[in-house]
Length: 284
Ligand SMILES: Nc1ncnc2c1ncn2[C@@H]1O[C@H](COP(=O)(O)OP(=O)(O)OP(=O)(O)O)[C@@H](O)[C@H]1O
Image (cartoon, rainbow, N blue to C red; front, side, top):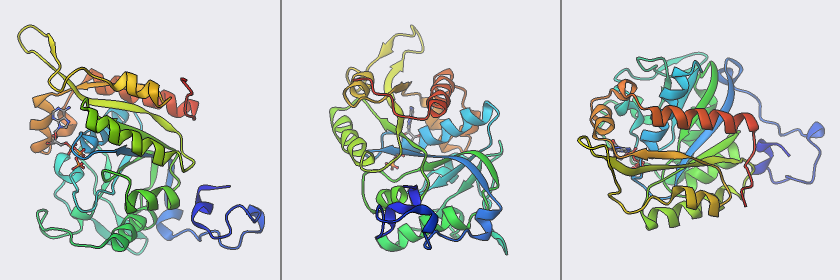
């Protein structure tokens, strides 16, 4: 059964060849070739999911891949801000034209369609999910190796819609060392398992602070538990990231692409490996 069958009432009781409800491709989809769609998800808000999405995109781009980011965090969008994108999204007969970051990452976010970036987006659930669907169908993504989707926190409407209607190839989970964050990420992992995509792995953000004087790792939120948590959920552990004031400062200045981090580069390499292997590893 294909991804697009998930939302069909006849799912499982037809054969794909005879399917008459296969969605017709939009002009923008015909003009695009997105090889892998990866959802970056967290259970709890504020664990650094957008920062991890942004930096994964940067690291993948540095490895020579063509990358885009679809910001599906419609009411709390932060991707345009951390990339310093001021240009508005454009429109053509072929679809929506997504602005490109300085480094060449294509970005689409509702914040790129409203006049003032600090105006609130006041939309009910069904409209939000419609916007996300439109970003997938009507944006001319062009040729991309990876489209990363910055998901809203949690397992609500938007997450469900994305898993039901977008061809997600796999998921990256983000957590931080607090017990609460880990409890909530377990819920998100269980939610993803109701759908087809494999979980490529878990990233533990804000795992420690590195002392600038003695390089000692200070575990501000307690002992990092990412590796253990990944094992418990039988998913790969992609790596731990420090709480680094330089990342916060550059993100606030719209210059996340200037942040250099061997940790992120390593995580992006591990992710690329997991994608190549193509399936969730059973570590149990
Ligand atoms: N490793 C890090 N080091 C320093 N600051 C970080 C780190 N990760 C995230 N931050 C900062 O923490 C704040 C929240 O991060 P971010 O917006 O990425 O979280 P989020 O999980 O996407 O939030 P939301 O749930 O609202 O979508 C931002 O100001 C960001 O710059």
